[in-house]
Length: 225
Image (cartoon, rainbow, N blue to C red; front, side, top):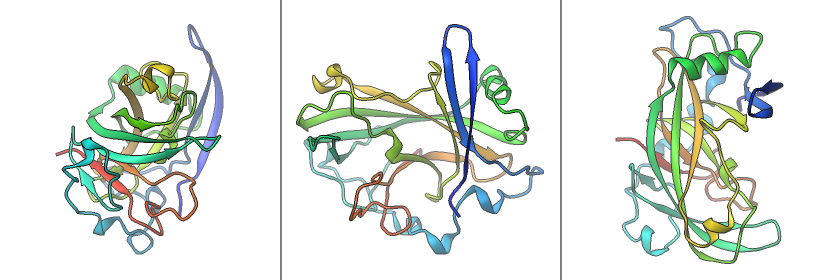
């Protein structure tokens, strides 16, 4: 079962209006394992087979094969298609997976009025992206193609906060087109004692005939050591 989403509107000083979207979290009792709704069952996912080493030629612009796994700092290249048919090659690499601070967790907890994050540990996952070649793609975005996963490549709950400077995702900028590096931040939530977030997967987004699809293909995996 895919994780469900919930949303709420919040107003914060110096940030104007945020939209907070997260998963519909169950209420775990640590140290029980993660509830079934926190990730699809193993029978419905192919990610256990995605254990190939990172392609050494990724940095030179060769598109990564479905199922490739990369460690921190190891770039994998994907082909991006924009809203007007533009195409570009983008190299992405995992930077780190770090626990949220007490203050950051408190902020996130304030955005939910039913305690959906109670009993969950929050982590930030940072991804570095750099354009390799192709058409101008400014103001497009592909951050929704990346999802948090555990060390086995299984999805974990994700929380999306729009407009939060401490952990945000961005559209491609003119500077990105010119070669500037862009760092994206993803928020993952895991039950205490459960499968800890270990990185990200690239599932190809909503493209048709998608060989990276989480259920019907083999995502790319960006995993911490």
